[in-house]
Length: 246
Image (cartoon, rainbow, N blue to C red; front, side, top):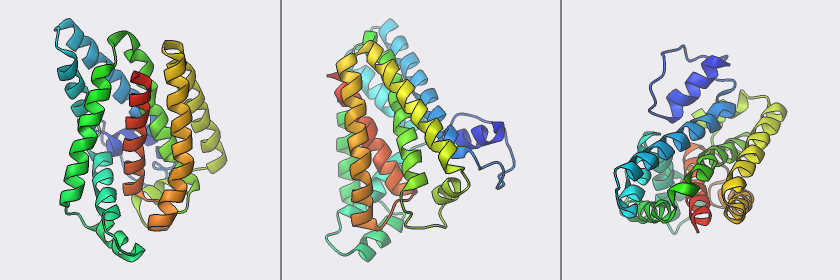
């Protein structure tokens, strides 16, 4: 299981990890450890927020630092999925055309514009949050990844040959569902200790968005994959950070 943890961090972050063999056995629990990448991300962002406070940086500059760091820590892998999905959605055409655009590695103008808007909104949400409440937002990055993992495990895949589908198919589903749900519950409790209304509303809306995401993915693409999961994760984090900061 340690090797699965290392593989999760190696795949979904730029945090240095030891080299291990990538085989079927090692990837079995990758999605179960995926939320821990988010937990590490949240802790790093809190440390950066604390350092910014010591340096007396203004709130908006701190927000931009945190926004940039949240993307750089994971190497932009989820933002790439966001951009690809936005590009595909911009095509006013049939599902086959959207799927073709989703697989295209090039970034269209619509994806660039929407990514810029997304980053501005996330930076603004971080800026609006005071340091005294920031510890409570750490679980956001764990919860969003737990929900993303659950979607990959239980929602239909548009491509069974993809990496995300491979991780999901290797996992024992019942045990993973219980474990990931427990992480979401613990994260919700921790968030609520710092901001009861913000914590509960952020998680509730995230759960509603999770339910809608299945409908969204099936309608537009016929299933989920790594790109749509990245889109879901980024939007989920924006929603949760924004609601928690209000």
